[in-house]
Length: 57
Image 1: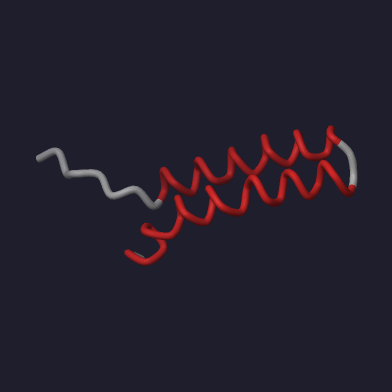
Image 2: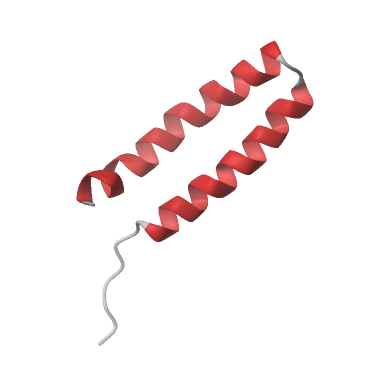
């Protein structure tokens, strides 16, 4: 789990711009924007689910 926690920000920061720019060039701008919104939302959820927060107790 620690490996996933460490790589989640790196993977999202590298793959998201590459995928969005590829879609904008190969398909169209609207598809790239839609992909950016969907993938960013999924990445945000993944970051929250794998975050290591201190216990309150």
